[in-house]
Length: 191
Image (cartoon, rainbow, N blue to C red; front, side, top):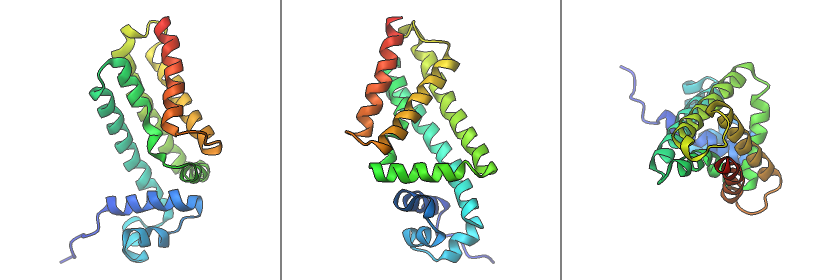
């Protein structure tokens, strides 16, 4: 009879995210194991390799981010606030150093065809949540392009702000995201 799993996949994935934030693409299975309080063998047995761990992290992150975007949009007091809330997905990147480390890992991920495909699905899922929020806010944003294009624009703004802030961290990321997303929404509001 196999032993029951006492260490959850989520615990290992959380430790992976923390290891990437601290070490960037140089993170190791040993960093993950130490962060989760388990042996390297436990991590390797569960995910097979660093690549397997990154694939699992990307899939789990996509589910978490899109659920968070939807919940934030639905909890907002107005549909436009819902768009703003859904667009604020990267606020959890932490400080500029951890954001830069995450972007460094992103660069490495883009070299791997499997991870690049999963990242494409991740961004498509985020774009779909932005489209959903934009459709609800359409009456209040008469100058916005059709929802598919508007969602791409907002996703590009959010990704660009996050990258720029990780390189030039002036102020808080949340403030930068709000300012730049609000600038786009204000233009679309005026029509």
